[in-house]
Length: 577
Image (cartoon, rainbow, N blue to C red; front, side, top):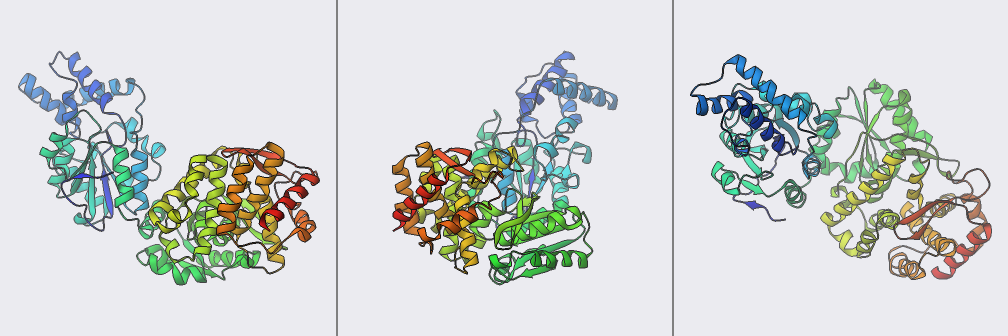
């Protein structure tokens, strides 16, 4: 999407002042209908579409303008109160006010780039203002709202946006305005702010050009797409804004030595990272233990943490799993924010709320469900990762696509395209997170549908546990990549999964991008024993698998016979040579 702009967006933007009607809600048709209906009841000559031009003005100013034109006078204070109440009544009765398509996507794009969002509306419509927290949670706290009740002069006067600028706490050159009405554009420009117009109503583009808009977009979705492609991400500022919105009394950051050395310099602008007490663990799966959890508990205790405190986990899956478990248990649960710094962590461990540590050689044997308050998804930390680590995470991306989206899976076959482009990779990461979040929302504690996320993990965790007990270097993603081949073979034997798809995965993905396992048919007895410890098993001595009928059609709770599992493992060994 190319911007339809006359000017270039300023650098180092820190805040966005956002209008409500026509930007966040598709409510202007209802407002126009309500104003029209109220004035027609008075017998005054008005046109429904003219009220789009007055959007952003206060109710009193709108009444006065029509009264001057039709009656030659302004309204009295009593008339203002009575007529606006009637207009509000008609507005509420006019039906549901839907969120503007693309508005949520636009706000998420701003959030990922670390921008504070401030509401600046000429409305005093309580029904919509009260809906903001439900419809756009976390974006507009009360202290970052400017409504018609907070100003003496509405748009096109500069006052609303000057108050918004003040509430943002940022310098004028670091703040933008997002509007959908010429009156609002004039107000933004009068305040000396870079103003973007999104033409969500019937007003022609020329009116926004006359008002002085710096950029003009035809709809919210195109604006959101443009932001994604053109506004650099800033996870350091995003983290700070998230923490500010959560209003924690104390903060503790959990990370490991490698992340502290390699990633923290990229987060040097974050006040949270710079000022918080820090727990630095030794890296590696072998340190995902109760001893590491104790270190985090001790730091929380030393900081005087309460139930209103915040644990910020910055690292890979080992950190978000361990820190998340510590957070789930300290004072029976405190809030966590996860900032995954690996691809694997971003698309798997950091989202979904599973936390845990290894115990007596068994993967994630001790754990709890504890959803993080927020997860920051950014490709920035991935620039310091070796390709092996990227490919470990890529296995989880392949798994997500296999269970949910054939088209996405076929895109992922172009491995080099994804791992060489931070923009493409981040889009793929977000696609995976969206899929996972939708599954988790429907089954937060893995009673049913969520089990589809375990595809490849029953065999994969067994491979991983075997490597751990033999001190073999094997990443989680590598284990899952091999586990998926075993389970695709089972899917073929039991559900008729296409053998051509199976071969494509083995030959074009697994053999090309993942190392051969140091395990063979001679290890089957131990692998079978380790699969028997899997948490998905239902206590009947059978191993529980998620299998695929075809790509995008998973089936949970398959318990193949021992003969089928042995046959699948034999075929796997033959295919891998």
